[in-house]
Structure formats: structure tokens, C-alpha cells
Image (cartoon, rainbow, N blue to C red; front, side, top):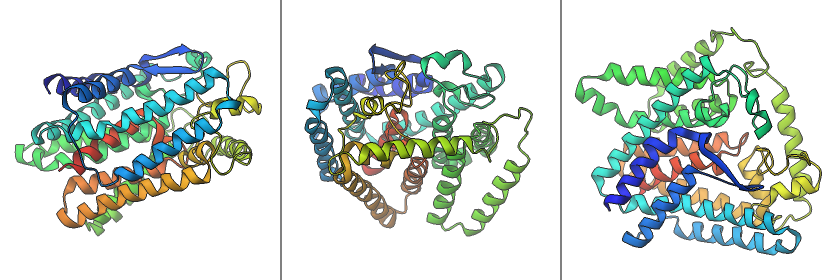
Amino acid sequence: MGILKFLLKFLILVVFPLGELFRFTLINSINFSVLDIVVFLIVLSWVVFIRKKVKIEFFWPLIIFIMILIFSLLLNVSSLPILSFISAFLYIVRWVLYLLIIYVIFSMDKNFKEKILWYLSVSGLVIAIIGYVQFFLFPSLQSLYYLGWDSHLYRLFSTFLDPNFCGLILVLSLLLNFNHIKVFKKWGKLYVFYIIQFLIFIAILLTYSRTALIALIISIVSLLLLKRRWKLIVIFLLIVSFVIFFLPRTFKTEGTNFLRTNSIQSRLSSINDVLTIYKEQPIFGIGFNALRFQQFKHGYINAANWEITHAGAGTDDSFLFVLVTTGVVGLTLYLFLWYSILKSLVKKSIKKKNNLVFITISSCIAVIAGSFTINALFYPFIMLWLWIILGVTESS
């Protein structure tokens, strides 16, 4: 148990804040990160030393969805090059490994589970601070364009090299911090709590990510509704509107314009491309996750860098991503999985009225809201965050 706790602490406090800085390519489109390695070691340690029997409310929806992931890929194996098949299969393996973090968290004692939530909050604050440093000292990713990254000029993207994913993680961090407000009050340090939340809030705005902003608004309103804080909803919306209106526009670029249209047109084009691919295999899809090869095959991504571009392996909508890779059957099962997760959380919220349950529901809503414009539900760092807080909440 000692090694498992150490690895979890190391994962959250050290590896997580490093974001995408330590990402490696093994062969062509087969990529992995330090985060993947540590998650694998944690799950392996749990299997070898603990392997505690755990009962999860949404166990069968999870199992059935995993089965459709494997089935969809095997159904299309003959049409895929061997490296594309291996890459797709490893994508499934990674998704399952991150999922198993829920079981690892179930095995921890109550005291350590509470510490894990504090570790996540510290990690979120570190990401925001690094983001401020990056915003002023390294305002563009133009030098990494050859590796498949967009420039994101004058936007905060921290160690994740993408303002949308970074912004969504900061939203999750801001939400989770509300779980600690009573402790700050008990310490007589409530002002520290407000300073931290203010820093994270401004960092979210400096990403100029509409995805993060919408997720922030929807999730905070959801949290306040669950807690029946009607007046605070109006105050929050007024504050957000005021701050956005007066947010400095020192650097006027397309990326810092909240009313920009280029990204919308790009997303619509991507959706159209994916729907064209989907029509070829509408029932069980093209195989999870064989989207990169299919986009290359149809000429939707550049033939010169199709194996490294970050736009190749997914699409700007998690549910559309599931639809094209696993078909209408897979999407139906995936929606049922999320219905089961949210149903379980709502039952807990009615039974216990626990603040953490409300925060977990709001966090899920934030990610789901963001997943309509970015592939948030399958982004490793966001998956890890959600599975950790789900594990803590479900086992409490």
C-alpha cells in the first residue's frame, strides 16, 4: 500500500502539472507520456499487491462499453495497417488503465482519499502559476508548429500546450477547491481561498477559450443550483459578464477574440469530414480508435504529417468521436454509461447531500459541456481527474 500511495502522490503532484511536456513518440503514430507510464505502474501495483474486490454502481455499463470498443476494432482489423491497428488497440488499453484508477482509489483509506483531493487542488494551482509565467514569457507555440501544435498566440496554455484543455482543467480545479472552503474557514485563512480562486479564475479567462468559459458558467450554475444558492447564480453571472467585457485586449489576435469565427468554421469542417467517414460504417463504426488512419485515407489530414498531427487521432466532439469509431451502437452504450454515472451521483446527492458529490456532478457537467467542442472526455489528464474524484465520491 505504501508504494501505491507514493505513486499516486507522485502522479498528481509531480507528473500531472508537467502536462504535455514529456510526451514521446515510440513508432510513427504510437505516442505515450510520463503520465501513461506512471498510471500503468499504479494499476500494475494495485493488481499485484492489492486487487481488492470493489463494487461500483456503473460496473456493467463500463464492461459492456469496453466490449464494444474491442469488438468495433476487431470488426475492422482487416482494413487497417498493422501499425494503425496496434495504435488503436493501445488507445483502448490506455482508456481501460485510466478507468482502473477508480478501483485503485476505492482501495485507499479515508484519510488518504481526502489528501488526494488536496493534491489535485495543489496541482491545479501549480498549473495556473506556470500558466501565468508562460503567458508573459512564452506567449506562442510557433516554435513547436513542426510537432503538430498550433501557435495559440497570446493565450495561456501552461504545460498542456493547448488553451482549451488547459482552461477546462483549471475549471475542474476551481470547482474542486470549493470542497476545501470549510477547512480554510476553520484555519482562519478564508482570504487565502479567495486569492487562489481569483488567480485560477483569471487564468481561465486568459486562455481565451470559449470552451472553458462555457464549461465554467454551466458547471458553477449547476453547483449553485444543486446547493440552492439562487442569489449567488445572478451575482456570479454578473461578475463573469463584467470581467469578460473589461478583460484587457492588449494583444489583439484572432485567438484572443471571443467572437472569432475561424475556429467555428474549422470545427464545422472537421464535423463534416467525420460524418462522411461515419456513413461508411454506421452501426459499429470504423473501429476504436482507427480515426487517424481513416482521416488520412480520405485525405482529410496532411499526408506529410498525418502520423504526428494532433488533429488526426480525434475530432472536436467526444460524442461524435464515439459515434464514428464505434457506431450508433457504441454511442448508445456510451450515453447509457454516462447516464448510469450521473444517476449514481444524483442518488448519493439525495441521500447524503455531501458537498463533494455536488462538486463531482458539476465537474462531470463541465467536462460533458466542453466535450462538444473538444475531445475532453478522452483527454488523458481530464479522464484521470474525473476518475479520481469519481473514485473518492463513489467510495465515500
